[in-house]
Every structure is written in C-alpha cells, then in structure tokens.
Figure 1: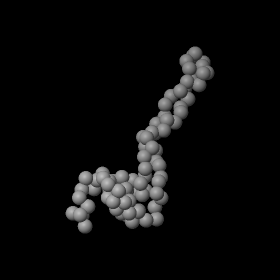
Figure 2: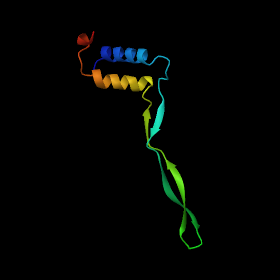
Figure 3: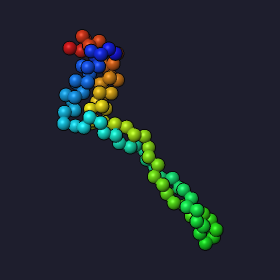
Length: 84
C-alpha cells in the first residue's frame, strides 16, 4: 500500500467516524483468578482471594483507528482507480 492509498483511507475513516474518538481502547475477555492470601482457615487450608486479570486491549469498533484498520483490511490490496 502506498502513501496515496493510505491518505485516501485515512480521509475516508475520518469521514465515516465524524464526532467519535480517534483512539479508544477497550479490554476484552478479562477474568478473575484465585490468589492465595497467605492466611489459613480453621481447617488449615489456605484462604483464597480473587484478582482481576485484564484481557486483550483492542480499539473500540467505532473509533477512527478501528475504522481505518477495517478499511485497510478490505481495500489494502484493491486498485484505487477501480473504486472511484
């Protein structure tokens, strides 16, 4: 992909996402894992606590960056002259 095509795709992404944030990261597939607290209960077993583990950070699908990435995936190998 050359600079002219990248500029055209960025321009299109800005037009398609007018009024929306340019970058917005959201976390996907976060979970809780059991972590020992270092204390023991009445039976001598360790007391477990829970800690949050963050998942993958991705761009929100409505932000300009995500729209540009989608356009790049779709039109990255296309001929721009044929798209006009």
